[in-house]
Structure formats: structure tokens, C-alpha cells
Length: 119
Length: 115
Image 1 (tube, one colour):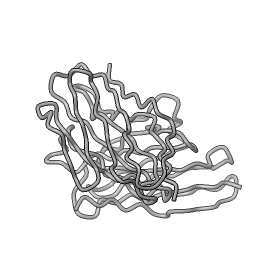
Image 2 (tube, rainbow over the protein chains, first blue to last red):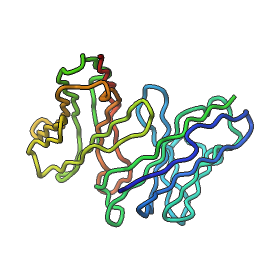
Image 3 (cartoon, rainbow over the protein chains, first blue to last red):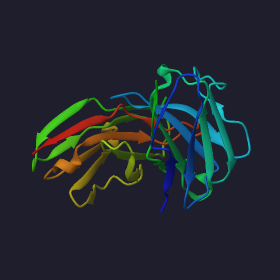
Image 4 (spheres, helix red, strand yellow):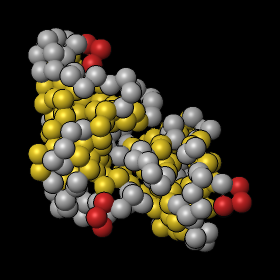
């Protein structure tokens, strides 16, 4: 149980284009999903918290117009990297909490991640 | 403030050796949980275990064992008879404290198991 599916796993795009990454909870409902970015050999950096039916909460320093997050249903959140540039190249990982009513003590379950390369 | 420290950046062992990954945490909560995750080279973070602060008994699951000591604020992870497939980055984490929403991850320990 508690499977999170993230798609695509790899994407290469040209500078200036937009890329959409999907994150789905397959066997549970997720009112909250988290989007992380991970640089090589570093820990996870929280970008934003995605709440179903409301606006995402972005971390300090994360441009909300650059990284558009939509959480339209209890099983789907999307991250769109708009007008991507080479510095946006990174590993993006989504996660969701599968606990009773989203208990804060529930572990996060992660998608497989998306490796974005902007040329 | 919530904090997780994994002082070991990288560890290399030879296959079949035992290895212990350290995790030291800080939390203002009196009741709390701790997690360990594994991130293999493929990138996906795999949830390994959740322990709560009420239970300081060691947990064993196959070759994995966890030692939780509240007195030293540590939650260490031991792999017995390591295998090449254990090569990964391991993260220790705290769930959000009351009134917050962020999970706190350590910086991770990269384990290399050599054949």
C-alpha cells in the first residue's frame, strides 16, 4: 500500500519551454503533497506544500510563478516548471502522507522522482 | 527547533561487514516519531521504519536493526552482513512538530558496500 506514482521519470527540454510533472497517490487519498528538489549528493529541499483545493504554500526563495503547483484532486498534484532554464535542471520528488486523516506522524511516501535536464 | 544530524557523510564497507548509521535529533516535542528512508541510486526514497518515542526497544527486521535511545537523542540504524544492494543514501527524519508542517530530514549518509 501507500504507492505514489510520479511521471515522467526523466525529461529533457529546451530552454524556455515548460514541463509538467505529475504526482499521483494510487491507493490512498492525499490532502497534502510535498514537492522537493534534490541537488546532487545533497538532502531534500522542500519547495512547496500542495493542498487539495487550495493554493500551494511555497518555501522562502521558491518562485511561485516559476514552479506552478496544482492539486486538483485528492490523488493528483502537478508541478509545472515554466520557462525552464538550465539552472532548473535537477531531481524533483513528490511525496504524500498516507495516514488516517493525514496524521502528522504518518511517514511520507515518495514518488520515483523526475530528473529534469534543460538544454 | 527540530533538527536531525547525520554526521557521517559517506561510509564504505566490504560486503558482509556490519555497519551502523548514526542519527541524532533535536525536538521540542515530548512525544514524537522518527523515520528512516533509503534512497538507492535509482532515486526513489523508500520508507524503512517509523518508531515512536514511547518505545525504546530495539527493532529488528531481517538484517536491519534500529537502536533508539532517548537519553542521547539518537536513533541509529545497523545493517548486519551488508550486501552490495544496500548501497544507497540513508536519511533519518522527524515528522512535523506541533504547529508546523515540515518534515525534517538529515543530510543523509551515503553507504557504499564493496564486493
